[in-house]
Length: 231
Image (cartoon, rainbow, N blue to C red; front, side, top):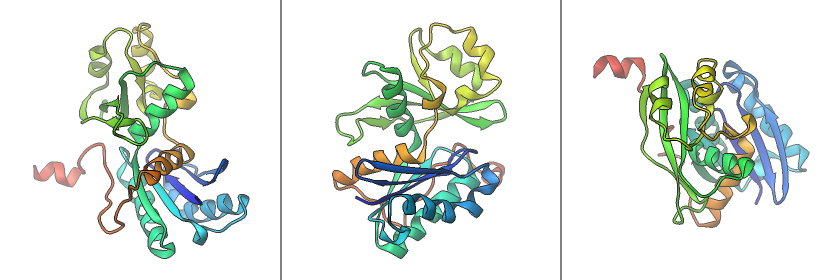
């Protein structure tokens, strides 16, 4: 199935085209570059596989967790592609993608993966990816919460499987060094990628899942400042 995938959930975004066993990926640069580069990057990735974005049968996008601006760009672009091409649209959880990447790279046993995203202000959005036979990808993201980074690491049980973009924060290094009992994946398997998101979306598509372009919305790590002031 000809698939276009978008991940703008983090500062270093990417897009990918997938077609059978073939993959083509393109980086999107920093967060401020996503909106400017995403259309051309998708066209380049699809052209590498010999087709055009309008030929896509499935559009996948990481719906979150992530930043406001990045997720809005990715989800809006994915919706536009789905409307224009008639392709199916699937929004995938970055937590689900990270769990699959980490397990594949680290060879972990089937067990929950504790995942954290940088939420700013010294906090992380912490959740747990659970093995789930009812999910086409084999994983389901549990509920998350905002907690101080140090508190999250302190809360992890010895031997816990830990992944997520927050592990690459400078402030996280000393805290992890004090917890050698935790099990971490290699750096390249801690964050979602467009290609990995596309692979997860294909599993969901094979199970008959899809999202409505009119109702798909991003999953942010925290309310906006305006929403916080109103609460």
